[in-house]
Length: 114
Image 1 (cartoon, rainbow, N blue to C red):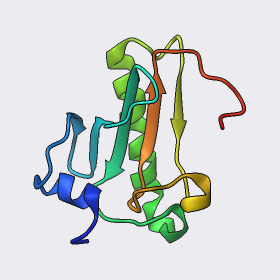
Image 2: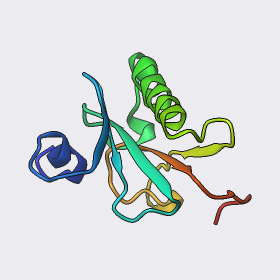
Image 3: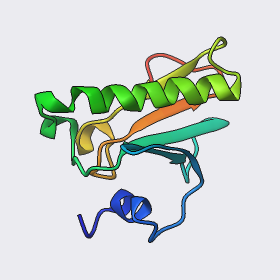
Image 4: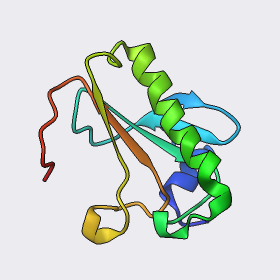
């Protein structure tokens, strides 16, 4: 989508602190980190919200989580713990309408989260 911030990052029009990339997934540091390690993993194909997922997208969503797992291992935080979060629509806190998985680590996480 031409006006999507994350699509512009994927296209290289906007710089991002890339930490992971393969054919279908891109990972980059969040510009407003909520933890010492806060990375967003996004599909390279535009999908606005979780509500727009199709059954054929199951593997793609799984790849977002596998990328987060790999990155947590590379950071050395997998054993101490990390949080993954996906928000769906504005009431849940989604501000960029291109699905993305937050991976947060490096500090104790509390429940319930805000």
